[in-house]
Amino acid sequence: MRARPVSHGTAAVGVVLSAILAVPAQAGLLPWLPPPVNICGETGFDPVNRLPDPAAPPAPVLPPSIDIPIWVPQLTPVPIPDPPHDNTRVAQIPLPSDPCRNPCPEVRDTPEPESESTDESASTGSAIALPRIRINPEIEPIPIPVPGDESEPVQVAPTPVVRPIERGPVAAPVVPTRVESVRLVDQVTGHGSANRTDMRWQVDGTDLGLFWETEPGKVAMVFGDTFGEGWAYGGAGSDTADWRSNVLAYSTDKDLSDGITIDSMVQDSACHAAELLGSRKIKNWETTTIPTSGFALGKRQFLSYMSVNHWSKIPGMWLTNYGGLAYSDDGGQTWTKDQHARWENMFGLGRFQVAAMVPQGDYVYMFGTPNGRIGTIGLARVRKADVLNKTAYQYWVDGDWAPAAENSATPLVHGTASELSVRFDEESRQWQMVYLDSVAGQIVLRTAAQPQGVWTSSVPLVSTEMYPKAYGGFIHPWSTARDLYFTMSAWDSYNVYLMHARLNPPS
Image 1 (tube, rainbow, N blue to C red):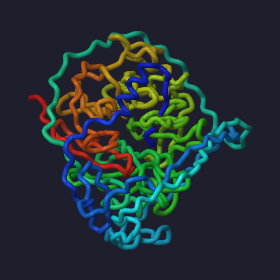
Image 2 (cartoon, rainbow, N blue to C red):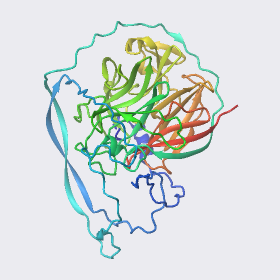
Image 3 (cartoon, rainbow, N blue to C red):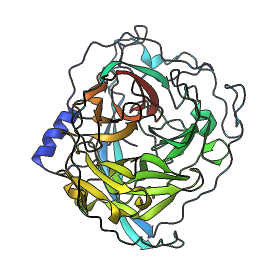
């Protein structure tokens, strides 16, 4: 997922955006440390905000270049309907017993040992080089629909269901959980990670890392926009850097205290992670498709996802076409987008564009926010048998479960939220919710006795003062009431980290 989205053009939104973009007062930086190194001697990424390396040369006074963007409109034919997605799949070969051995030398060369830079331009001379001025044409596609060829088969719409209005009172508030400590456990993806995803699956840069249990003892972990060879530090990669909108990994690692081991990934060729849900990759039409949660009902796997129209130049904002559901009947190898389980984003005001869906009891609960990072949290539920029938959903509105009330859903908590992750903890019989609060600059935790609340006040887990440009916060399903494991992404390093919060729940 690329952290960028859309202005709604109101004064209130302007105030919120100002808060998001404001630079918070810096707490004391942590001491400089050399970046982490895995057992193969490969240097990873440290997302912590630290003091500069005392041995490093001073940063340049001026940037080496200044880019001046020039908007260039371009008519772009878009064949419709969407063509079929390529579901070519190959089995995962056993990984080498030596973790440092390249599993596919024919796909990618083993990187040379890293050495100290000898760049003479980093000298401490007194001369100040003036930046180069560069004109940077920015293509702005203007999509033009044209007739296409082959398409996905048309799906039969489910029979409409009308549920009655039912009472949905909130439960008594629970005592907020205290956070004793939060630590970074390990880098999960990218160069320098223990999983070596760059060499094993051509995953150099990626984000999110959403979990669900696919079967007892096995979890799936799905990532957002993913880039391979050609990706460079500094955020999401270019379109030419082996871009896939989403990829999926599996893990059976039960001991998360030292990190999470990825056993395999869904592949379309040897040592190459496959794109699960296709996207048109055309700005202003469909730039990408990003998973937002996953869950299993029996042997069928489900993904909620958002179809992104375009990323905004305003950090943390984007415009979606719709939020939708996809399913898999082969353990997550191939996926079908349901053509009717979609929540359209009319005028950019759709309330359930970024969803976190959780089965519990007789229902699947859907927690949703609008596109971007300045929306509020709404709630819906649906009987498990009707999860692909949008007409069967009931929305929580002022203490009632109401049908066909998508845009009237009552906000569950005060304030803005994005990138939700929700879990029901069997031990404590409480719900846990983790999300990014962009205004506060924190990834936070809330708890409740019921999905509709009352939810506790937010408890900070991660601050963007310590972890600059951090986002996400997706709970591992094998967390407990005492040990909360979750993934965090960092924009500049554009990779995923496993975090551990030690909790002190009320007795």
